[in-house]
Image 1 (cartoon, rainbow over the protein chains, first blue to last red):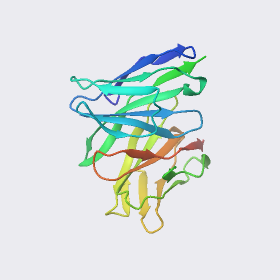
Image 2 (image 1 turned 120 degrees about the horizontal axis):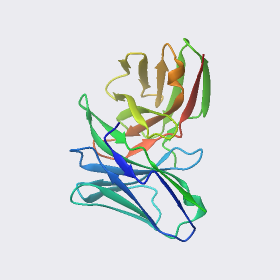
Image 3 (image 1 turned 180 degrees about the vertical axis):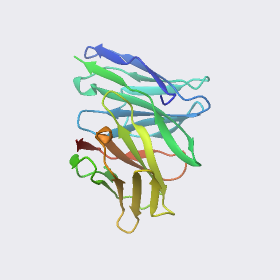
Length: 114
Length: 112
């Protein structure tokens, strides 16, 4: 157990709809990262938040948005969903292990857009 | 633009032999590299890391080698065990707290 929680575990929805994925980082971690993993693809970085503020942006579509709340949990909002948005969405928080920074991943949310 | 590449999508190895997983990167500013292991239906888990000031880091059966001039790193697993069967991702970053760039993964199968 990484200490990072994600809900829901599975989500099935229709094209054009909007969904919200939720992530709680490990206790004490201030950074939250969101990744998308499509079939046969690596982990594509979407966005990073640090202590409530956006820190870095990757390949995130304009239809997607995220935020980090004062209690440090984060939400990823996906709107106007398309079939191609079907993927695994991972959240990670960063911490230190033996003085080296690493990322601890949640179990992911599997999104299926029909 | 994929800055971290794993050119072998899959690898099969006999139990007890060595598994070598390779990773190449293009950005010479990367100074920290990690390997993650991922089982189906789970998130990736951290395996081992190396900073650019070293060329080797060892942790039990796992050793990571870094060749900065070739922009290449490899993960050696010796001896390989069936429980090592998973997808392995390499990742790189520059400066603490910045974005981590992941490769596309190599699926390792260890045959009993």
